[in-house]
Image (cartoon, rainbow over all chains, first blue to last red; front, side, top):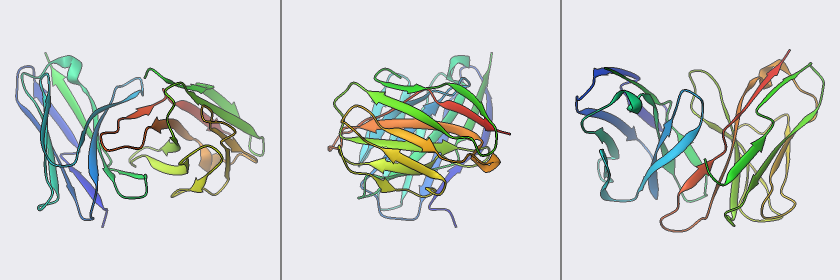
Length: 108
Length: 113
């Protein structure tokens, strides 16, 4: 069983829809990262969470440490949000464990 | 991906050839990483360096060597390339502290034929 599971693997939605991507994990962590990878390949860090909730623009990330679950929400989605979203677990040894990613496509 | 520069962006190698991927960061970060990304799989750690002069193996170190000669630079060497090393390679760096952000290079597409 993978330490980190993302769902869904693929998501297609219409512009304006509210998007939720989930990340569940089975190990203890010190923090969880959400990353965005654009079709050109570049990877950008969106959030690092150790508890609660963070918001940046139209993006909201939440984490429930007890339930070992995190979600990434996108409000008022736009075609430019189309990307692969990756959650990554941060343990105590400075090493990240990555999920396989969720491929999001937002159609105009 | 301001701050982390990796080269080359594209490379084709023949089986058995050697090459070095270069990575440099200008953010005074302590920790640097090399990952590989393969279709259908998450990023996997090859090697990491927690500080200048130290390196440690990650999940998939076989066939690779690394060098952290100074705080800025962390290179990845393939001594004898194999087709199984065809992948996209990412260098990353972070300042290991409570609210750290990890920064990635733009990736290096390597094909071994």
